[in-house]
Amino acid sequence: MTSKPIKFGTDGWRAIIGNEFTQFNLGRVAEATADWITESKITQNGVIIGYDARFRSRDFAMYCAQVFASKRIKVKFADTISPTPAVSWAAGEFMAIGIVITASHNPPEYNGFKIKAPFGGPATPAQIREVEDRIQDTFDENSVKSFEEYSKAGLIKSVSLTDLYLEEISKKIDLKLIAEKGIRIAHDPMFGSGKSLIAHLLPGQVEELHNEDNPGFKDVAPEPIERNLTEMPSFVKLTSSDLGIANDGDADRVGMFDENGDYVDSHQILCLLTKYLGITRGMKGEIIKTFSTTDMLRKQAEKYGLPITTTPIGFKYIAEKILDGDMLVSGEESGGIAIKGHIPERDGIFIGLMIAEMTARLNKPLSALIKELFEEFGPHYHYRNDLHTSQEKKDAMVSFCENDKLTKIASGNVVQREKTDGIKHWLEDGSWLLVRPSGTEPVLRVYSEASTPEKAKALVEDVCAMIDSPVIFN
Image 1 (cartoon, rainbow, N blue to C red):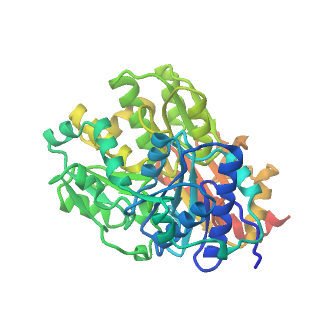
Image 2 (image 1 turned 30 degrees about the vertical axis):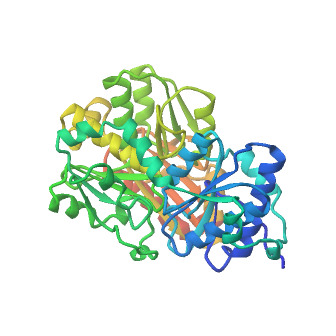
């Protein structure tokens, strides 16, 4: 049996269950990963395998464990659903390779395969290429024995991964302060692997939404952005919560709400953390941001005397920079954030709790802290549209922008362009718009930043309307 070539996206390989994501293809990927581990000698400590709450994720994870065991690679297998940052932490703790069966924030029909390196973060682009180069067209499924046989042989052992991860978080977040200040939290795990975790750490202070088993995610992709979290504003107010925390399907991303039920995006979270860690707590280090992240971070870097680096979009690029230097805060527009003193990896549970700690320590509501940011650096608002269109139209729009033909957006003149990852267009008033094709889905992503929410939305809508214009095909 043969199949199509398999390529990893911005964070792992993802595909539709029963279409490209099959046991056969999963075997191909797991076998290539096993061969890479053996041949590169990246670790002698085997693999740690975790899985999310998606359809058949545990079954797929078990099959991966069997493939690794067939290659004589020892497996620590999570005894329950585990968030991706738990696997990343364990990879660093045990100096092993971490494998997560998850499609993260993708729609429910997808599943996926993520690789975590022994440093405790996503495998680097170079490491991923080494795995991709080893993926064969064929895979001998008959060479794989049962999960039970490998377990009896000692090649697969169960580990309480999530419990160990929660113990680690409790050492790094001032849960006692949060409890003493009576901070109440509304948590939406979006039916994902973050279910019940914050409530476990702060008993009696957390109300949960969407914490039951639902592999279909109520027909909403488990990505913690405002349009997917329509129930949270009223839930925050109904439960009299001081803040709301939402996590994606594998809990490595975060979105938040203030006490009024107003959405707090990842740009604002990054800026809040930069000020809290750099000013309140007096910590030093570099700000690392992706190409689609707020320009307020640059202004903070200048005022606070902090170095700043911009990377392509995808946390694997951030992880490389973290390993090279001394990171204070790093993150991306999509809700993946890391800070100094924790793993070099996105962690939506940890970051949400760090913001809760911040409000408790500063004794101010989240809305007031955001207002202070805007007073200090000016208002910054963001808008994004994931435009589903044909491949022809998507390619035409990207080509149109790459050839510098987009010169005016919503009556504003384009004065500068950057092409680090996609095409970012800067306008005269300091606002910007970014056009970038998705690396994992058949969509065109269009992002903006402006001084008002109306202007940010208008920029995106103006460009999205062009997708059907004959001018982009000329």
